[in-house]
Length: 592
Image (tube, rainbow, N blue to C red; front, top):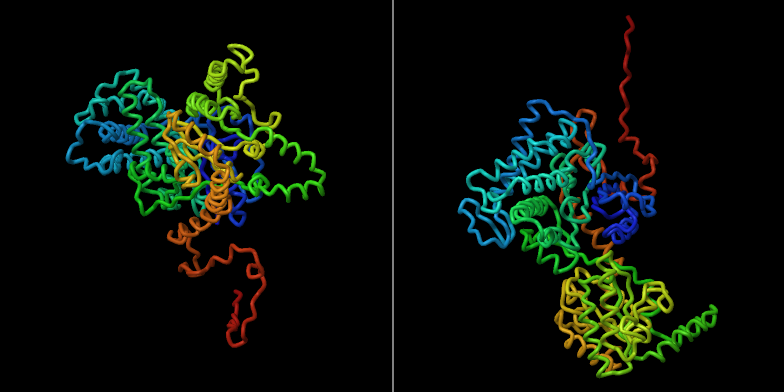
């Protein structure tokens, strides 16, 4: 099978979002071929290069979303008229679409569905306009100049001033219109690409978008032009992200952009053969945004459990015997001395940023120290950008203030029971070593998607205390303690209860490891996508029939086993009975 993998700011770029699971998926499905169509999000990402690609990746085509390359296409009068018509229809759909959470009552003709789901009229209007613009770009060679033109801004202004437009759209001023037109230009850049040809996306058997939003737009066009089925994976719903961004923008800008992304999401959900949420939290959001439940297939992300196997087994006697044979006895003794010297250690591991709420964790640890004076807290992680750097400095100062008797000074950590470490430092060579040196792993976030760090602790067989955010409850499933977010007292009480009960820690850790191996391994992820690919293609009509000599279609001309390596695919002629061999009649050729 030939898969067209669609990404935005991810695979195959180094450090791209979602690149790890895409790489594991591609390597796990080595029987299939992959064509990667990737959008880059910045010059720094392109300069960083690609990850090492496996041989099953046959082709990679990239396009920048952060810069528009001039295509030199000049539209004639007829093309400009077509552009004005389709762009005006798209803008009119944005101005009249029912907005999620709005108090404005929709008109009876709109018939909106679930919360956040646009009405049928606006959805059809948006889809027709989008396909019309795509066909125009394919016929003329691009839309770069047209989307930048004053013609686009005037069409948007007419839609905002037309009767029936929502109040927020009517209140849009010239700066708002320019902002919205600029965002639409960036979002519609994929329409001008040359990917939609028979030897491009038309040659794949299935398109798999690694996220919703702009990444799925080429898949929509491949389905429109060639009938290629589309599968969309969302570990974090992009529409939810757009609702939470741009708080400083004007109400008109927020309303129009939310309408655009809502209509694009609705069209993606309608056209996709299957939608793959990574957890129940994302699945609920997809249903709220209008996804059909019959199309939903939850597939949890897969993590590599191999690096955590040694810690997870927790068999020190066997480790000692193996260590003596391998010359690792000194390393094992050092680890055991460290664990004996630090019997009560809380471990937090992740990116340092305000969403992780380390402030509440530090206040909770103050109560833990009051109940269990010998307890330590290890915070292992790197700051995420300048905001993370500032937050880390604030947390260091807070730790020094909460434990003044143990710090060297008012602004220094010193011999503080709270240690701030970076991954790879002394005593934290690997993630497994970090979890091995702790008694309880803590997650204190107020915003969390799919907690991969929590699964790593489960692989290590560690008891956990987490806040009830995102997909935490779904991941834990009763194998750890869950408390409300922003509640330091509840967090402290849960930690103290586990620190004082080693048998309970052991039971929860063993159950957590068994659950993680069953649900969150690479093997289950790859197997689930393999079955979903086959199910999708099996339900899709053949798009390229094989024709016989007389031009008639030949059913079963390309059987499924033809793609499987083996002796039956070799060009060895089969033995044919003599009675079944046709003897051609001699042909007499007359030469004049």
